[in-house]
Length: 378
Image 1 (cartoon, one colour):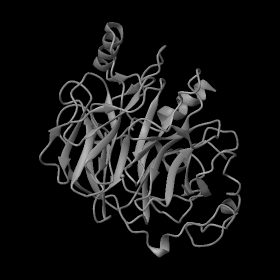
Image 2 (spheres, rainbow, N blue to C red):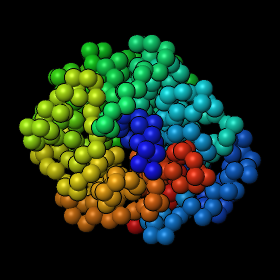
Image 3 (cartoon, rainbow, N blue to C red):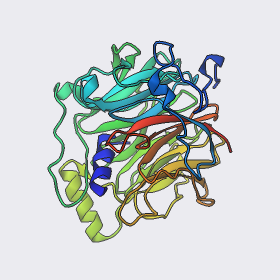
């Protein structure tokens, strides 16, 4: 099972987004959802009884994808669409590529959503830009058409930090409009402020993995973090004034040496991460979890007062991963999911009515990671 978790975790990539139109009403898990051709599908009818005991925040739950490794689904500003990354041999995507879907569609096996990345190299961390007609994402395609190699097997579980990752802007048909970064080394994990004015991303340009912000056009780049350790997977608060992110931050001489040695090989070890909040300029930095294990994929609740995130801190073997809520002052920890498998990448819709997340549930006991939309109730 631990090996299965490692496979899923890395397949989900290196990490790592106001109005709800009437056309985007989500149906309950016992209803028949629409397939992409507008007709009820047999696959959709099977999407019932997905809510497990203890998952009291979910009023309904709908499965969107059926097959492959699907992760990091993020809402458009108007909540009508989702952009996500997927690795799926059936979609001719041997490593992660970026796709867009209407939020009320499902994608059973045999159906492929709109590809918006180049189909070359490896991609990660896509996000809608203001206006919902363009998307940013990170890609290695300038360094070659093939998927970059995975790290060789070793005792420690590691993530590759590909130096060929840069951040691009594309339209909804996959036409690249702009390259936002071109500095040597890793630039990825970009997300956009709900206010539409700033982008936060992780970069190696200082020699360490730090957070940076830039204006929406790529200008005015400013460094946010500076303490040794991997800082990444950042998201803005609903008012655009704060950032939530994950960090590995080694403290002992042994941990520092190990971190630096791995980083020199283009690797990080993500098995010990805690969550931090700071102002957008890096001030008022504070740690909000001290749980042990891997605490990651944090996202603000639309109230701005809570954080939802994925964690394995309850389990010595490092698996499963569940979703949790916590107050921004570190109090009030609450368990949200109970699948006993892998639940991660939780993201609230801008209006707070829905939560999208990735999970291994309902995959027939295989390796597939699909994403689901829950109707949220507090």
